[in-house]
Length: 355
Image 1 (tube, helix red, strand yellow):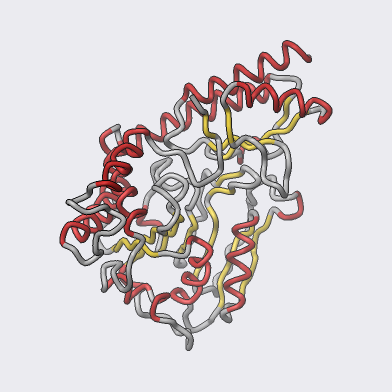
Image 2 (cartoon, one colour; image 1 turned 90 degrees about the vertical axis):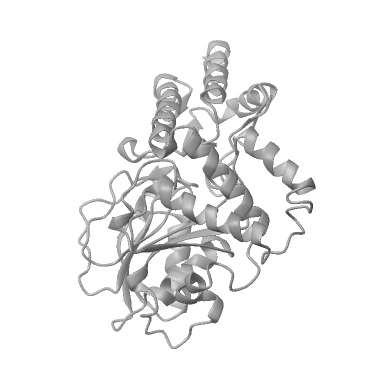
């Protein structure tokens, strides 16, 4: 058995893999890979995939769901274009690589970006606090979880301004109040499904109000919502698997139960990191991510021996991002507690032999 701690594309439930594999051979007499996106059977898939998002997150009336393409990286531009208003100003919190990317892309389309809070001064090892949110911005943007550095917002910014969040790596991992946000977007490949689709949850009243002189049709959320994510050929397979995964999530207690399981997994691994003298965590304790747990060896001379042990235990995907080094245990929804216990046991055994 392999224990997949990879940062993405993510692990999914085995039942979902099996159902998806069956549909590749026979979805409705045709493979899901060849069925027309205009066929009533796939239209029903898209409708259910959108409806299940609303059920899973208790999305209130007045919000629409869309499945687009381009990942959250294209979402950086979509957000800026659709949220731009008269001031052409926006406030951003910079907490890592992806937040930095969102800032960069917003500037490219003419947004006057005010980075009013940042943790770059300490290599993104904490979540900024005590900041003042600007009052003259069209919207406020932040990234809820930082996959590379291993930090996460456990309390969201409070503002009367339109609030936008990139939730790519922790959506569906914990309960949220969608009504606090005007726009949520997330790449599918962490907790939703395979790479290819990008989820948007958008407050209807913000649609069609952009003041941007540049608005390509595909990037206009109003048109995408009106066309029910069918403005062009959608990522059929990714949407189908997302639907299967959301069915599985709701059948297993929904987001509330998933949050409890995720909390237990994170507590188990962080307890070992803190107790084990050969390992250490590089980020502020109060801001630790429950999705992407980063840790380091106290002595890098031990790396070869430790790497050998976790690989022999069937663990994959553990090395940290190339920009940070160390280790990163990505523990998305489908990763079982048993896999986390395997990693903890390896760490204990490694310390017994080398401590």
